Each structure stands twice: as structure tokens, then as C-alpha cells.
Amino acid sequence: MASADTPTSRLLLLPAELLNQILLYLLHHPVPPPTALTPPDPPSRFCANVLLTSQRLNTLGTPILYGSNIFSADVSLLASHPSFILSFGPPRRTLPSVRHPRLLPLIKRFHLLVRLDTDPRFTAEDAWKAFTGVEELEIEVFQSMYDSCDYRVLGLFEGVRGVGRARVGGSVGRGYAEWLEGQMMRDIGDEDVGGGEYVLGEREMGWEVWKGNR
Image: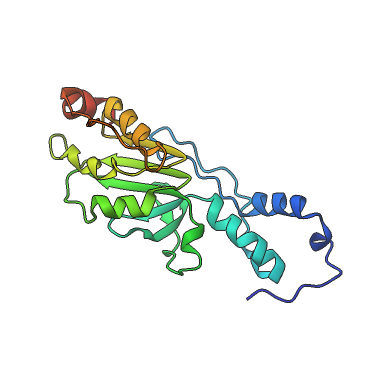
């Protein structure tokens, strides 16, 4: 629990703008993207304990901690049980999931692992509610073996809108991935007139996708 503020603290006497910059430096944990060429994790300056030193720092820093970092969305509960990502690994390291109703709305940056060889445990409506309007969403597509998946699982995200930055990668062709990214970054309420469905072709379903993403 945060301690009482002390008037003699030089940190607390700093202008709010400068104090926020310092808190962002201490509370933002940069995580390299989950790719095969990911370099070793950089030395971390991350120091969440600063939130325990003062009630004011706790109040100012909590939105920064939860708003600036990437959280792993749950494979079935999505944004309702996200976990703070320490490292994509391998092995991937996360903290216990966040469940507090006051903290969940602060989280705006998500990474989600979508397996194409298992049935999804969420609906298109669940995806819309979880990710519409978030600042960042990265979907990492995975299948355990060639020709073991149904790419229509990704169709559950086609109705998501208002994402500031969307990224779809992994075992899926760039044609559909780029189209889906564009769909998710469209304005909320911006729908196709007369239909704009993307038809998955051989490039998305065939050997080229598997070979190019393994």
C-alpha cells in the first residue's frame, strides 16, 4: 500500500509533465515482438515498486503502468483476464492475470495468440467487445502442423473497429492479414456498403503460407 506523501520529497516537487515522463520511463516495460529473429531482452529499467512509495505516485503511475504496456489477452476470456507480458521468450513469461474492474479499462494494448487448429472459445461479439477501440492489437496466428487449421477463425475479428494499430502475423498469408489489419483499424461504425468480404484463396490456405511463416 502506498505510504503518505512527504512534503520534502524532491521527486514530488517536480512539474507534473516531468514527473509523468519519469514515471513512463520507470513503468513502461519494452518487450521485443514475438518473432524468430527476436533479440535478447534489453536490460530492464522497469520498476513498478515506485507506485508503493507515495499515494500521489500511485495515482499518477497506475494509468501509465496499465496503459503503456502490452498485455497477453486470454485465449478464451480475451480482455477480461489479460496478463502483463514480461517476455515473449521462449518460454513466454507473464504475471498473474488482471481482474480488478478498476484496472481493466486502463489496459489498451494487447497481444493474442490464436490457434487455427483448435475451436475458438469465443465469439465474434466477444472479440468486438474486447478489442474495439483499443490502442494496439497484435494477433499471432499459430497452427501446430500444416493443413490442420481453419482460417475462418480469424473471421471472428473482422467486425472489430477503431484499433489504433493492428498487426496480424504468423501462419497466415499477408494478403488476408493486411486486409484484416485494415478492417480493424477502420473507424467505429464504418462498415462496408454492399459487402466487402475477403475471400481466402490458395495463397492464404496453401503451402506458400506454411513455408513462408515457419
